[in-house]
Image (cartoon, rainbow, N blue to C red; front, side, top):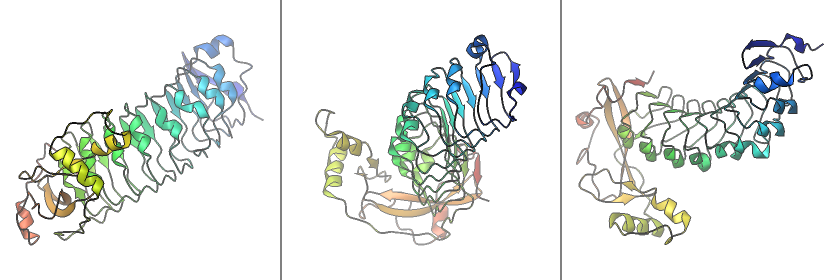
Length: 352
């Protein structure tokens, strides 16, 4: 028999219903004053199949832990918790169809959906303007939606332990992102646009399918930890890879960018404006060109902290543009002349 009398008032504003084997939540015995004053509610480690609508009676709630239940749905009532800042819902049975339509209207700052059954990041989750920490690790995610860029307050993104194969360039539009965890996925490359993550301090990419890194990663001046162990990083220098000629769209974009032709939002459709924002400058200091999708790729080895040698990808705008690091690289030995990354620029490189 369920016993909710075991709920403990841990302190002012805290109500703990955890580890009581509850399958429902009966709040009839809780006074209206107690409901009003509760700020933190613990319902973790029970047997709840869905979040009870009675949770909405705690209308001043700021923290809700519903982890380690059997939850397959979250009730519409949660959207009435207008002060809820933290929702911990890890280790349940939730998927992209489990959330109420208006979930994105919550003032959440911390959201943890790790250990569930999500195959996609719900669009409601990328409509949370105040969200600072998002954890959806250990699910079945296959991709990261471009709409992730809407989370402009995000500081920590944890998506480890999924089936993700690519990092969308839109991730680079998160100005406050400090911790990016993408370990234990199926990622084969890192987009050079990540160099725009000027606040990034930790990047976890271990146990993926990476064979190289973009050279632009050296521009992440605040990066202190880079985890790469468990990746098939290449062991031989590859001079040149396949070059696909640029499309007419790219040629037009290159002309606009390289010649600094002015344009304004009212001049172009929104998709073309977004495309022009993705221009990458050719790293060759003797070249003023840019590229979008079409480029010549070179892999060079660079010393990290004087101890590790990593293959970094160099993207050049055309076959006629020579590598800025070596005019005619022929062997691994010649790559020893690469500039190394000083220890004060990168404190931890985890390769093993």
